[in-house]
Each structure stands twice: as C-alpha cells, then as structure tokens.
Image (cartoon, rainbow, N blue to C red; front, side):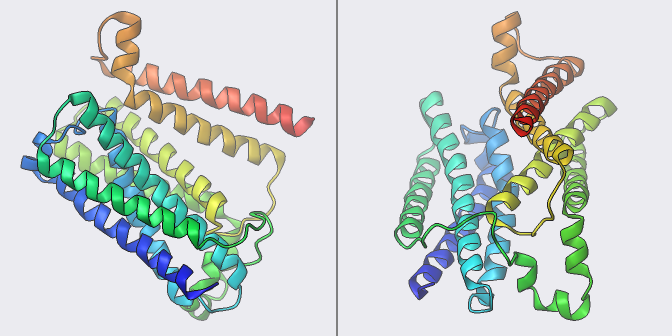
Length: 298
C-alpha cells in the first residue's frame, strides 16, 4: 500500500491517543467529572466502554504498523485499515454520546464543549483521510495472514504458540474477557463500596459478556487471529452470546427510562436490575439463535 496510507493509519493512532488522554481526564478527575454532562447513564456506559476499547485497539494498531512491509501485505493492509476504521467508529460513538448529553442537559462547561469539538474535528479528519486513501475492497473471509504472524518474537521464542492460539481462539477470548472484567469490577467494587454479592456477580457477567463480544466482533472485522472453521452449533452459540451482551448492555444503559415507562419509577433494587437486564439479554440471545438456526438450515 502507498506510504500515504501508512501515514493515515499513524494519524488515526495519534487521534486515538489524544482521545484517550482527554477521556481519562473528564472521567477520572473528580472536579472535571462532577461538571460533565455524561457522568450518568446511559452516556456513562458508552464512555466507559470507549475507555477500554480505544487503548486496546490503538495499541494493536501501533504494534502492527512497523511490520508494514513484511510478507502478507495485501491482508495486512485490509485488516489494519479495518481496525483503524473500527477504532474511529468507537471514538465516534463516544463523541456522539457526549454531544447528546450536552444537548439533553442544555448546557456544559465551555472547556468540555471545546474539547469535544476538537476531538470531533480530529475524528472526522481521520475518517476522511482513511476513506480517501482506502485500499480496494477485498474478501474478509479469504485472509491468509493474521496479526499473530506479525509478532516475530512469538514465533522465535514460542514456535508452537501461535497455532495453538488460532485453534483455541474462542477459549482465549473468554479467558481474557473474564480476567479483564474481574479487574474492572474489582476496581469498581472497591471504589464504589459495593458489598452485595448479587450486584458484584451481575456486574462481572455484564463486563465479561460485553468484552467477549467485543473480541469476537473485532476479530471478525479485522482478523486479529485466524480462526479455524467452526461447527454450526458453535457459530449459533457465539452469535447468541454477542446478542446477549448487546441486549444486556443496551438495557443496562437505558434501565431507568425503560423501567420508568413501565412502572412510573426508576430501578431501585438489585433484583429488579438483574431481572430486567439479564431477561433482555436472554430474549435477544434466544431470538438471534432462532434466526441463525433458521438461516443455516435453509
């Protein structure tokens, strides 16, 4: 791919780094957070997700770019551009959420609005550069190379590790998601003083399901790990888990407006929270599994 394309990818990586720094300031600095219009749900759910997803994708992007001219250039170009596009999409969703919070609230501190405007301009510019310098479309299912192949030390020091990771990618996604979720929920438990084991368990399920789904979707988009062909049952199960996480996250973010519309009052108890959100996730999972089974049987 042309050098200008590489420069566009580096620009996206830089934009993501700027976004992460500013997002950390507005969410972790107590004085700034107290004045931000997106400190509460449903806005906080999207921003919190972006805080985890953006640095992860950005780090993967930065690590791969030095291997730009190694064998497998066509696959690398398409996969890396897709990853950069996914990174900008996450940033765009977070920025759109921030603007929605400002509009709904009706006002916000001028520095926060200015920062939001600067990030929005950068994100639009990065997206335009990526689109303008895009490569011709190629098949997303015909890749012969993946991101693991661009880690030379992995093959040199652990020659059998990459094939094992590819063969057990789903299990790896699940373990990594659980470990990351445990860290997030543990920090939140300590920070917010949670003591209810049901609430802690529910939060662990939510975080694990969402992170696992992000791994699956991101891998399908950008081909981080080349996965072997899966059985019909495995494909249906994976799709159902992604749908479960999507339903769970959406209703978690919108729980108070939804419950208020039904009962006239927001969610105030843990059992109600668990029943509402997990129930929505199970409905989404069942519907997705039914549709997937019907499509694969046809």
